[in-house]
Image 1 (cartoon, helix red, strand yellow):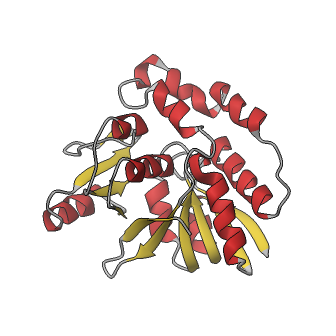
Image 2 (image 1 turned 30 degrees about the vertical axis):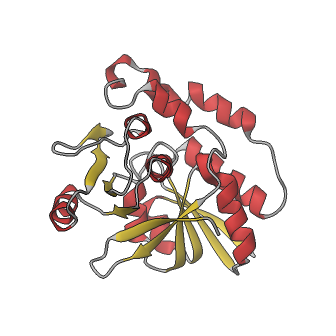
Image 3 (image 1 turned 90 degrees about the vertical axis):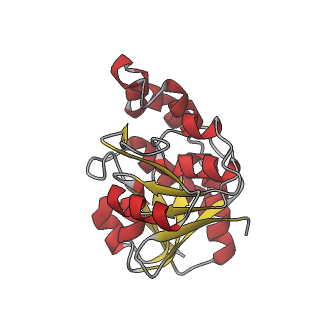
Length: 230
């Protein structure tokens, strides 16, 4: 089994085999919390305009997402796990669009299979990889705004790779250090309304969930995301 790490949208386009699109702060952490809150499925899309179109088709669906980290006008939620855990999403379809994470899913056109990745379900992702035993695995760290390397995504990728290869390295110190590096923006006063400190803590809860999220491409180019307990 060959495991490679890529970055950004270009990395998602290059990804082959079983592909894990990683966005720790905050897209794919939010999606795990949304499924845990009862969402029946998630539809990932590339643009707010497409999200609004899908809402007209799926009555009762809810919109979540961000641009420049901030909630999109007219959406039900931002990209904040804090908002999601306060909500009962039972039976709802959640339509999700973000700058990095969902863009990576849409861009992974050469992948054989796609799942999402985050710290909150990293061990489950590694377990899924071990069970499938694919020849090729691509771990794509989407980065900050899909253009700047993000420590949290790269740590997550290396953690998943370590577990999948049976090395079980300890990343706890690196994860804790995020509070003073990539995670410090969650504690800035000007960001609290849309990126509260609780988002940071929810996103670094390593291995909180024991399921993976599989993404399958729809005929309209968007991605259906559902829970898999494999």
